[in-house]
Length: 63
Image 1 (cartoon, rainbow, N blue to C red):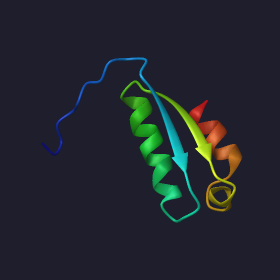
Image 2: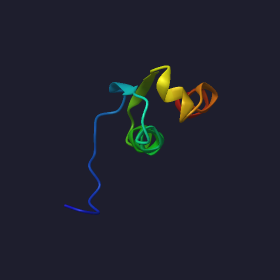
Image 3: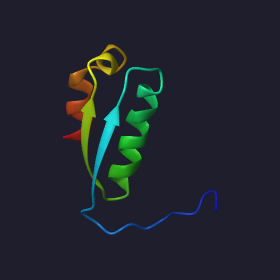
């Protein structure tokens, strides 16, 4: 399965909740990959997560 591209229907929506932990950085990559696959993403960061990835970063990445 590794390396195979999965095709998803365009326009699907996902809410991405991000909590305060080092994995918040990985959520940035996940966001980009989901967008590249055609998903519309809404990011809901906790206040603690904003210590790792700032609000401006989420706004820039999610549009």
